[in-house]
Image (tube, rainbow, N blue to C red; front, side, top):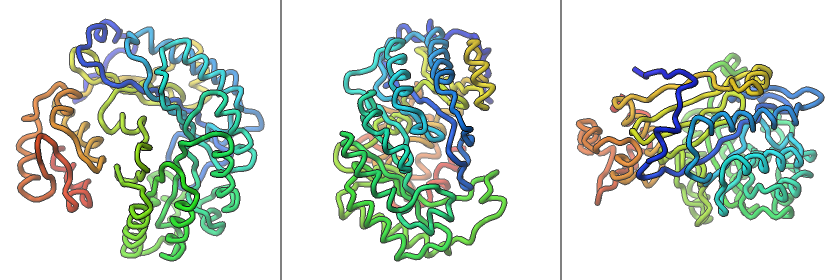
Amino acid sequence: MNKHMTSGEPLGTLNKHLMHPLPLGLYVHIPWCARKCPYCDFNSHQAGALLPERQYVAALLADLAQELALYDPLRPLQTLFIGGGTPSLFSAAAIAELLHGIAGLIPVAADAEITLEANPGTAETGKFAGFRTAGVNRLSIGIQSFQDQHLKALGRIHSGAEAVAALSAAKAAGFANVNLDLMFGLPGQSIEDAVADVRTAIALQPAQISYYQLTLEHGTPFARQPPLLPEDGLIWDMQQVGQAMLEQAGYRQYEVSAYAREGRQCRHNRNYWEFGDYLGIGAGAHGKLTPADGSVVRRWKVKHPAAYLEKASAGQALADQEIVSDLQKPLEFLMNALRLKEGFAERLFSERTGLPVTALQPQLDACLSDGLLQRHAGHVRCTEQGWRFLDSVLGRFC
């Protein structure tokens, strides 16, 4: 069972003598979109005629100040990720104000990775130069497909031509580090369609390509009225062919759905997968902190944007928090670390959870014996079979 804490219980006194500081990131959630896509289960809301940019930036900074009042910020931010929603709906001036305010509250490493999620609409790509000037040094662009019929089926509001133009606009604005999101298994998609999308993505030469299957998430319009999707065998073929094309083009798979060129893996996401620490601010944002006593504290914020604006301004953005028990830590760690193709070092497990590797027993030995995991020189990773059936592997540690 998780042990709940009171929202005002200080964390700072626990962190002041952390012997092996974990990397620290910051996630910022901006919850508005031009239109909610029917497959999306993120905390996103259709924007009105006017976005409350100034109020929301003020609320975000008040939220961060409240976090830091409870947590001793000995560590500088190594990564910062502005997600949504569609953060690129905000003006460059608002993003600049946000980043300046964050830097005034907590040290930001000189080489920090600062990502902003963006969509390819022309109104947003026109802001790319302003985002770069504001301090953003990495863009993650939600392309999903380069084919108009599939974009329409997904409820996207950009065209294939705008998707191609977005990558050019990002490079022209000075972004050398760009991720491109691409989906497969779309309604009515053929293997030829999927191959064409991957080929176009590779030709645009982004630093990273996120290639993942469309899933029908609970509570979404697609889940309530499912579209006709390709058969499972065809979807598998799309994945296998796409992966082979990406590998041949120099995009190495380092996570379940992430493929990057050398030196271009997303540092912020790696921090999640390696069970690092991160603060979370914004409507519905989640954070994870590791005090020096070895506990793992998860915190999450008020979810609805209107309620968040009200609560954050009053220093009450926190919805709740909980301590992850020692019994839960092995599964929580593995749910993240085994997403990485390379797996994890056993010392990292102990460092990030405060537990000995024996806490993974006897399940670890059983997975090794069954050919689902492999262990070499203090390193544990999935075999190809274990990678394919990762959910089953993780289920053994529940």
